[in-house]
Image (tube, rainbow, N blue to C red):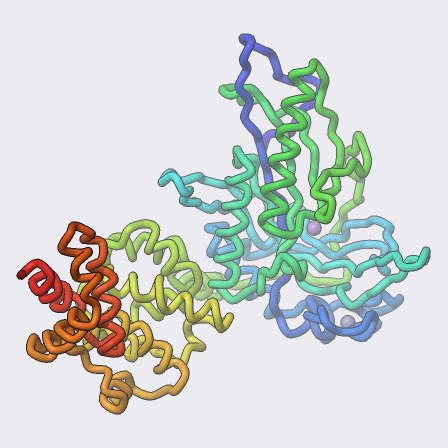
Amino acid sequence: MKEHDESLQDLTKEGPMTEYEAVIGLETHIQLNTITKIFCGCKADSWEDPPNTNICPVCAGLPGVLPVLNEEVVLKGARLAAAMHADIRLVSYFDRKNYFYPDLPKGFQISQFDQALGDGGYLDMPMPDGTVRHVNITKLHLEEDAGKTKIEGGRRYVDFNRCGVPLVEMVTDPDLRSADEAAQYLIRLRQLLRWLGVSEADMEKGHLRCDANVSIRPVGSTHLNAKTEIKNVNSIEAVRAAITMEIERQIALVEAGGRVESWTLDWDDTQKRLKKMRSKETEADYRYFREPDLLPLVVTEAWRDDIIQNLPELPLERRARFMEDYHLPEYDADILTADRPISEYFEAAMQAYGGDPKVVSNWIMNEVLRMQNELSISADALTLAPGHLVAVIKMVDAGKINTATGKSLLVKVQESGEAPEAIVEAEGLGQVSDDAALLTVIEGVLDSHPDEVASFREGKEGLLGWFMGQVMRETQGKADPGRTRALLEEALKGE
Ligand code: ZN
Ligand code: MN
């Protein structure tokens, strides 16, 4: 990886209208969703617990205690590394990163430095315009989290609950070129983490944290200019806003003849602006050395191969397969692989249906997703199972019920848990497509609305929809819309 260089800035103007591009790298900290912390038996996720209630001598850093590595952390970290196409090192090491901070009781953080669990890796990220952006991973290692400090009423409080919570730190090369690409990277990363089941990846709760390194250069240059580092961006929207603002600031500065300095910036999410934290920060000397209280982390080849072979089909792979196998548009494939439950729901429905995948896709994207959003649950938690959905689609296909009835039927199945066929039977929801029955209703509607009939015949053909509505009302929505339309037109234009 090339280092950013501020002594030789390449910001030369080649004309009056230099076009700039952004050079962005993201550093993420991912909280693994293990039951216990990385080096002790304390509960890992204490988001809702009172301060300092999930601590022990190990994570509180008392003298003389020894860390014991949690195997689940290694497993989940390795699974993530494999999914990022990183190599898993058979022998990796833990190191001490020494610094003083009130929320770091040991005076050092146990992390991995030069020989980390993951080596390399990348994410091939599909962009909304159809292109694919290849993002390389520079760093993927395990480490423990620090605690938190909070200032309240002029006092600073320390909460050690988060000390020792397992993290994967993952850093990209400066491969991203816009705020949108940075946001897209985080969206894909979050999707992957949840898909793998290794992290809740909730940015608001700090399960996924992001710092962004931003610099600019003229389009065509390969130089890395001085960068700024934006800290504390805790949502995808904040990442997008903060990076956009910083790119604009740097371009305006350079255009005015100024120089970008390597500041550390803090994103203030309430005021939506960047604040300078400190300037001219050089790489701190953390005096890394091997953690003497832990053995090298050794995994066998068989263990590593097992992790790789047991990876599920990844979201972007499944997305591509949905487009390939089911001939779904990219838009549909993207939505139907947004999370694992919805993608499994679609495939289960396709197996039961066997017909046009686009039909199933439309019903899921319109009806099932709306239901999910209203209830705030995932697809696998719906009472409306894929089999129920398919039964409804098949009744619509066969003309037994119309589409509107089908949609309301889905809601009834979700609420009652009863089979759709049984509800249709019990409530008499079957579609009226018998011409004689429809004609009786149509004649009744025309007879009671002579003025509208006259207007229609004078040329207000838009009234057809209104007549359709009347017939639907008379039949409680059960009229076959196609047949009704044909018969209505005939009756209205007939005389
Ligand atoms: Zn502990
Ligand atoms: Mn870190």
